[in-house]
Amino acid sequence: MIYGIVLAAGLGRRAGAPKALLRLGGETFHRRAVLAFRQAGLEVLVIVNPEVQGALPEPVPGEIRAVNVDPDQPGGMFASVRIGLTSAIDLGATGAILLPVDHPRVTGEDVRAVADRLRTGAGIVVASHEGRRGHPVGLSGAVMTEIAADPSLETLREVVGRDPGRVVEVEGSAGVLEGVNTKEDLELLSRRSFR
Figure 1 (tube, rainbow, N blue to C red):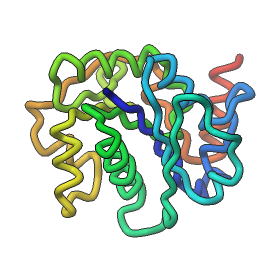
Figure 2: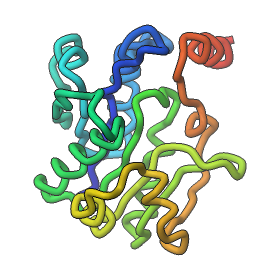
Figure 3: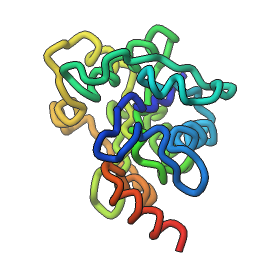
């Protein structure tokens, strides 16, 4: 089984609030990410920090949460990647799709395209749009185990770049490139999305 992993433990200092709690089109980024995975038929693991955990409503069916108690720890987001992958492995996952919560316009179709390539044997699948790589990123069970077993790894980019021959790109919507890091990013995305 492939699990969707939402990386939502960041504190969002530059955005003014944890990104999981930001809203686009009336929905929190957290809910939008969970819905994209559920629309693709996947179970979802959401990695949150204690503040986000306390602010979110109860998990929806098919959603499990794990808490990164120290999102400021060395390793930053990659610590959440490790928590998510370890949890998915413990649940018997055969693959995982990682989505930072700050990509609120990723669609269920984007996720499904990545999942379909994982199911056909790809090691790493990266969503792209018009030749530019973005998110989500899919990992086979073997790559998940590799990351869990190698404490020297520090970034997902390092994993993807380690063996370019095992990386497959799939075309996705413009949302795979639309990350929100600041309040200004959110304002621009809101204007583009709802003109």
